Amino acid sequence: MTESMGENGRLRTLLIGIDAGCQSVLEPQFARNRLPNLQRLFAGTSGALESQIPPWTASAWPSLYTGTNPGKHGVFDFLSFEGYEWSVVNATHVRRRSLWEYLDEHGFRSVVVNVPVTHPPRPFDGALVPGYTAPESPECHPPGLLADITDAIGEYLVYGTVESATDCIRMRGEAFRYLAERFDPDFGFVQFQWTDAVCHKRPGDWTELQRVYSAVDEQIGALLDACDPHNVIVVSDHGMGPYDGQSFLMNEYLRGQGYVQATNGGSGMPSWAAVRDRQLKRGVGATQHDPSRIERLTAATARLGVTSQRIETVLSRIGLKEFVLRHVPTTAISTATEQVDFPRSRAYMRSRTELGVRINLQGREPAGIVPPEEYESVRSDLIDRLEALETPAGRPVFESVVRREQQFSGPHAERAVDIVTIPTEFDQFLSTRLGTQQFSEPIEPWNHKRDGFVAALGSAIDETASLGDAHLFDIAPTVLATFDVPADTEMDGRTLPIVDPVGDRTYPSFEPDERSATSDRSIEDRLADLGYIE
Image 1 (tube, helix red, strand yellow):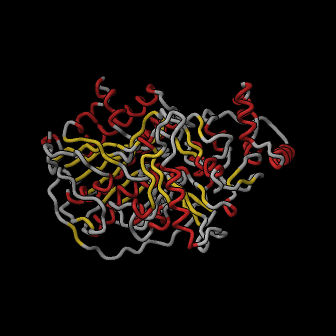
Image 2: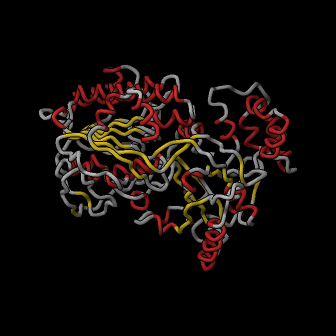
Image 3: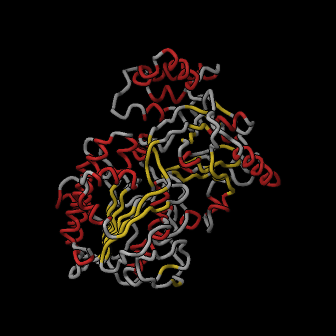
């Protein structure tokens, strides 16, 4: 197999990212010979790739391309919080060197296409087209590159729609091939996001899943033919699959325990608007309305205790929920939603993809009410309560409930939640919503799982070596080893045994740019559409 990989071209290692890829999704397609190019790569050496906590795109890809846990690189979620305010994360929140920056220091050139959380790009020898959390027309490196790409291949979209998913996948491959020919890189990294998005937008739809994966496989074949890399490593950031458990409404539970206080009138967070949006993924809009009149009415009913969550329960019982969701405007639902009142709450879940509980600590939060001397006793009390929680079926809700310092290490670990809550087998869907009960049917029937995959083939790859305990953090040092470049001593991963180890060294301190907020609201809309923001 290694003889079929390139020996004459410059591209030494090609890293292919398949978001949410996992063996349970690949194997049925392999059995039908639907993905010949991926099957060729998996015929080298392959295995499961354990993801990190939390196993979501915005935090996991920076962990993969820096080789460090979120406590070191600083991104824990799709959202970055400053007190009770938040914005979507971007590359300025990543506080560690990337793979291509390490390679740049050693004189190697890179081409990077569609990798999440890489906008705005930092300069290096090569080219970068940002991926998820970037605007639709992102700033690229070098400046003006996007215009060159569109001149060369036509339209280039970062996001697109389900209907245009295969076009977006084609754009990734065509853009990479154009840039590889132009820049002649030593290292290439191309990521395909629609393998994740299709599972959120069409959960359980194997016809759509196969259409997306077939398009990815076709582009992988074209990349191998055109670029002839010496080594190929295929990775996913986490897995994906059906959820057989229930939704657990963390903030509703915390309200019942006396920790969360609620407010009405649209000023808090989260809102039921995102729930409505997720159930309108096919694009059905609201009817015409007088916004001021409806919003005044819903705000008034909310003050009387008639919140959208209670309305939702009643409408479900009489069979009118879907009709109302399709015809009541988002602003009206948001206004009527009962929301967490952060300043008056002692502890709460801010974002479900943070996987944990935040304490409203005096001196840290803008209106903190938990005195520092009570911090540890509050954490202990919450951990004991959460560890004991069971679903209505008698299963533990969480497989692990720990203090953040048990999960994360590094200079940014204090930005993590105070208590990390890991759902049992990732089969329980955590929600930040308030409601009339603590458990409900899963909001999404498919969602993220812990194990992804890794496969490798090439002249530097030992196909007989085991990948039995590979971890997401191991990918960066392994890729560097294919260039005989030592890993950073600060990395949390190790070089996988498929590549000869090079060792590690201490690199000069890294000085990232100042953090900046993401101002493009359309990015928030896309995250809500996929269920990442409630």
